[in-house]
Length: 356
Image (cartoon, rainbow, N blue to C red; front, side, top):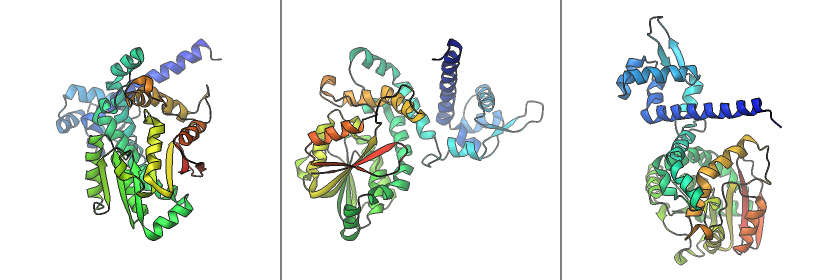
């Protein structure tokens, strides 16, 4: 058991991190880090290139340097300090879309701060908060976080399905990506299977707008489609050899219906590949990852899941962290005959192959 002093220190450090993260969010929104990545600047120069007031520029730069978030590059001793970013600071605070960048988390944190009053109301009423309510920063943050995850890792994940992987490599076929978001998983599937056609589905229109732009930019529009469409559409039934649902089942208000829809999409010998966040059991002394995921669940995933149903009482209310036994139970209720864990090494997700 912690003493009052040690527990106080822990909360104090959390508060410090919270305050500093808000200054990072400010720097991202104002474009400060991008400008500093181009070369060292004085406060007056930063104010000029970003269009912010000089006094605010100086205070922000001094605070960031004190926190070790940026670097003092030069100081003439007369207040003429120049500030910049070293290589590590550039990697983490700029270059969005790279695997080292934490800008996606900064954007998601800003979105959750902006919706905190709505989440508070949801806590008091039992209602949910829609995904759309979190706005463009949440959507963009998730896109940038997922882009390197899919482009650098997905080909290895699907290789863990040897029979299905070999068939799709050899003969092509058709793949569905359910809950495709901004389309990076859809693009990665198309890259992994050059002979296959890939269809991405999502119910968030703004995400599909981004997905179409990304697919066009990747030069894949001839065999990749992304659209606002419910996977339960009967016109899609029985068309796919492989159906993928990446990090989406836990957000569904009715995950059984969602998995049942995935089952309807595959051919008789098809496979549904589910990847989601899961932990074996509840732990009071959880890892940093579990702490992160639970906080994300409180502020985003659970409210979204409760909103994704006709009424909150009808939502499964899964939250970010599913138990493996829960996923297996949901899949069985959706009508899958076999639910098998897939051996994929991943820091955050677990994988299952579901077959009719």
